[in-house]
Image (cartoon, rainbow over all chains, first blue to last red; front, side, top):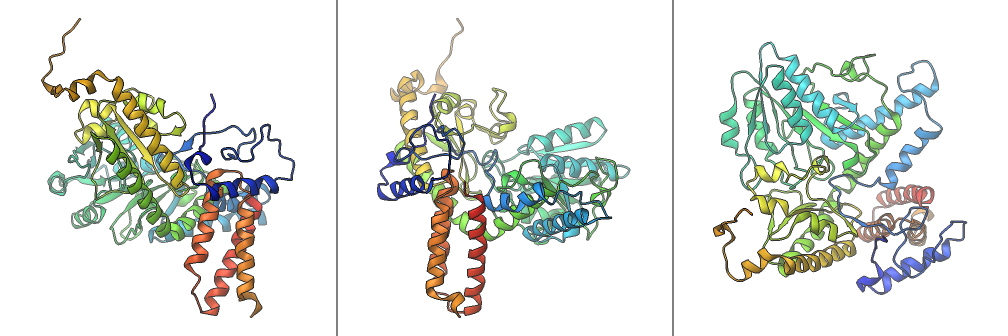
Length: 452
Length: 71
């Protein structure tokens, strides 16, 4: 089954044609391209020349930025030393690179480099932060506050803490996906040790009021942890401005490598953690294990690139998102955007198409890589718990699609996705008996479905 | 200063665009070309020679990155 990348067919005429013939001429080196690439749909970068779907799922993961790969390569080839080897140049140069990366990550969030711990990803960072803080202070503090729309790793860490005797409050969210600050204030108890609220949600893209939550927590002297995996490098984050005490960072959401992340742990006032991983005492004793220098260097480079490109990327992503949403909503009726319209990161758009089954729409859009929920829960057929938490009806929750727009997304890709989406939604609705009934003016809620 | 002459900058610009054409990945190729164009356009009215030199050096470094990574 060939999957199309349609550049020529989108009528942009001159520019794409120039792009395609020039590389054809420059390709004098021996590359085994079995079919003639020439003026057809664009090449893809994988060796066998097969065509691949458009990538519109940046919340799941992002491609590696070439600048990041370039910075990592020396540490995968020549400079392969262990950064904790103190006795020779291999160790010293590896350590220097690791420290430089640490500084780059710290600069992005306004922290000191001694406050950054490298981990294997945001999941490990979340586990470390929540379980670590809870267990350290467990003699006096046994309560934790979080929200219902957190990432699975946060919810699961809290669940495991419940079996250890902690009490957890899962704050509900309003219909727009944001938490109610009054409810948060009411949820505090004298023995609350930690509040954990993610900055930008990975499924619906809403941005929580982090400034306000930080204020509230600081007043009550409770630690504030935020999972900033989707927010870092995309919106400005400052740990001092936002009064954040712990922050989880993920490499592969900011055009960096997979398998690396970081945890910001505030030093003033000091946040103490019980380490999850015991060993040789690396990373200030909080996370033992050899720091993977190439991955750390990649994370650092990704953070630096993100800091430089943040404004440009944000402007572009906002424009493309506006284009996508406006075009779809103007052509197709009964489309709901999940999550607040204002307080959001524009690059994550979750739309529910009424009277259309989400899975069938995803399968129809086979030449666009999309998702209908988060990757970590897509194996089950249940609608996402995030959509349930914001009060979406069951049938709308089943018909949701998440569009992700990132640094490398082009206008043509957005236009193609929009065109296909509109075409298939219309086609699927034509086939839908529910749609027919709605067109006839029947109120679906009033129907009594009988058992056979 | 020959290093920051108009001709030099234009040569760099053309070289960057030419090297970017060698990216075989559609997304990388289009990003590189778009970003290069927008960056040069954005900075076209800068007069401070120090700033110009800094930008030219940054462009040269990026040219090396693209040369290495574009396959």
